[in-house]
Image (cartoon, rainbow, N blue to C red; front, side, top):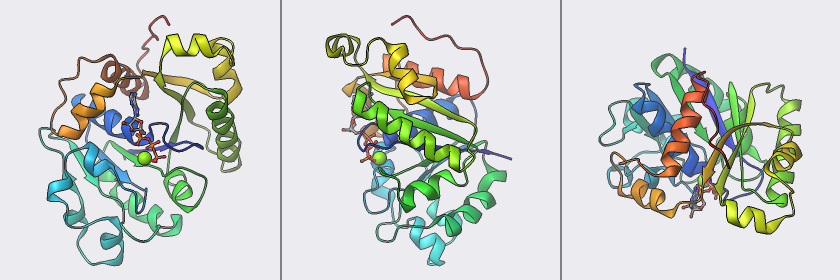
Length: 243
Ligand SMILES: Nc1ncnc2c1ncn2[C@@H]1O[C@H](COP(=O)(O)OP(=O)(O)OP(=O)(O)O)[C@@H](O)[C@H]1O
Ligand SMILES: [Mg+2]
């Protein structure tokens, strides 16, 4: 049975979709069969970050309404044998009571199902979190984002989500040192109350590569960091590079 991973944040725009797209690629490079589900109704972007936009006809809402088959809404990502995407519904937000059984029915066909949550703590957030075995909370390295990550952690505890980890995205060591507001990186991590699983550097070139679709060349620091997250998810001991 596959593992369901929700990628969430309190604050918007911290990089949930970028992390979902990169982690999906990294896990599938390791030979894992991965399905990305875009839960961001109306504002979908995983289709663009995986290059399937041109071929897109049906979305999650269509499959759940029965306007298409499940197979018709699962799009393969070019150049990746094992990576697939379900684009977000363009209109209605899908509740967890509808999405959870759908996700559960797909678990046997994939090693990982990655749910890209919308920003905020509403219905879309819950529908990503409720079916999840693991929740990755994405933050940027500033005090406002760290406080939001801590709020998300408290909510996840109410839902008894035990396996929850922190990803710090868009990390820029020089900026972080200048900001001083958080003290050192350990204090920032402590402020979220979560265990770190990924430290992803700021790197616009990776997003440019994602937007092209197809296989990423993948030598960038950012993609390497996402591959380390993938290996930690797979249970490997992968030390953090010195920052
Ligand atoms: N590591 C990174 N380096 C540089 N730019 C990044 C990085 N991660 C994300 N970005 C950029 O930050 C912006 C927000 O990223 P993304 O859409 O992944 O965030 P999000 O959390 O999914 O947003 P939303 O809350 O709207 O769903 C985008 O312009 C993206 O290209
Ligand atoms: Mg997003």
